[in-house]
Image 1 (tube, rainbow, N blue to C red):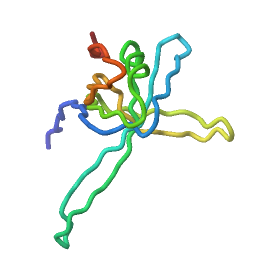
Image 2: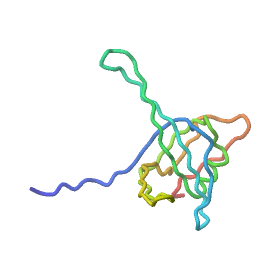
Image 3: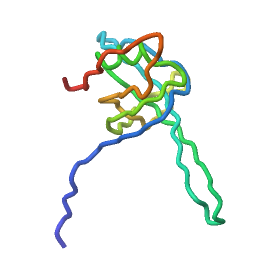
Image 4: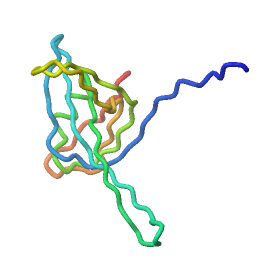
Length: 129
């Protein structure tokens, strides 16, 4: 039997609202990093015929100029459309040293879905621009 070659596709597009204000920080090399969690919903008809809703949460991580813009203009409740890719972040817990893993989305493009009356954010460049 021949080996099946799968295309290496890792793309995510997800919309939702921030569950809290973004966390802005800098990596040890000085790179700006902003992370935030969004809540997303799925509405569906259950087996009993009634409408149901399921809510999920995912962490988004943005780097460089995108991180700066997201950290400056987003806040709890902001509606966004995120395009990016899945990544697994691994680290050892400080107390006890157990390995930890988290599946998150590396944001490559963040579209602000609402205009704030207080500010008018600039166009957000894609990560690769």
